[in-house]
Length: 105
Image (cartoon, one colour):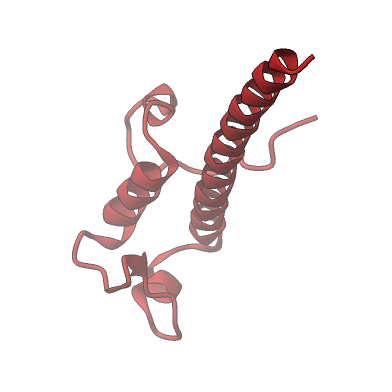
């Protein structure tokens, strides 16, 4: 099975491995700054994508697809963090329940 994003272009000459040390949010901002400039219009911190925007006029289809993949990565990274926090809370609740059950039996 191949990764559907493995052939997407990277907008700079730095090694791909360096991106893996960045958070998804940092990677998206780096991509946007490299391809649209640091002065690109943002609404609530997100790049403006409407008709006539730099997102529509300056990025190729492949770059827009890469941008979408990075946004999806942000969403999934947050979902993993949320799930880990929920698991940690469940494990803590379970441990407390185990202690309580052992005290009464």
